[in-house]
Image (tube, rainbow, N blue to C red; front, top):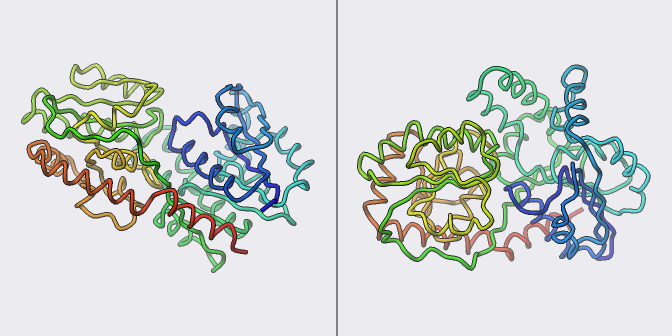
Length: 394
């Protein structure tokens, strides 16, 4: 195909530090397999030379638009006091980007928005084909998050939960195609719609099979690990729950056990957890691969959040056994306890982790089954086929 398309991003999609960036970068790569001419516009506080290096193989023209903390704070405050749209939309809105899109949209045959944060730039535009990747249901994430926080954050999550849900349902009928990472997220949005309309297509993350694979399941020193961006509420809540309610139960059986929390920009609550000698908070690491290979078990005790947890899929692909919660396992279609261990309360989670640590062969069998699941369900070939079908359909 020779159509010219525009991708609109709420932030630089490269380097790949978070699950959101990985998802967006995946979409760019999939679109590049279909379209010859791709331009991308994104919002940023400052230029990173690595961004162009990562995007240049797929995009002809790269248009960064600059925003400051003052601008985003002012936009969000205005939206909070006087607006009706999600605060997410105001936070990532740029009048300069809007003006450029208004003046140049006629050059494109298709516009692709990477989440609801960018939808407003073209939501009301007619005469051009529009596709949006919700990624996940932000409204569902906020509904869960508001139950776990207090003070100003409870107020903000409560307000934005309602605004996001109304906005998400509107977008489904404003865009030609909408896609999302899991059926659960899609059903959450669809159940709030007052009328039947366009469907929300489910496209999971494709997982590249890493060159590094865990092979040692008889570790001399047992360890647990959590990987994620440690400024996200769902990740902060997860590790705090694990350290405060689960970890000591396991330590009673394995007193030398270490718990590694690997990820950028750790919140003060996370840093405080690292005051314990047996909890290691790494901060940003250049090569995350060792944290999928060296630990005995990858733990993902998610209590809030939405979408599919990319970190779980990455750990499975690397051959690391995983213990998570029902929320952590959401959206991973057809998964069973053979491939992924699920436990929702502290006692059950500690018991299952202890059992796995005591049985090396069973841990290995679970890890191998998990890796096989990734190969059979989330390979690039499989996800590309699903994505192409949606994009080609009129």
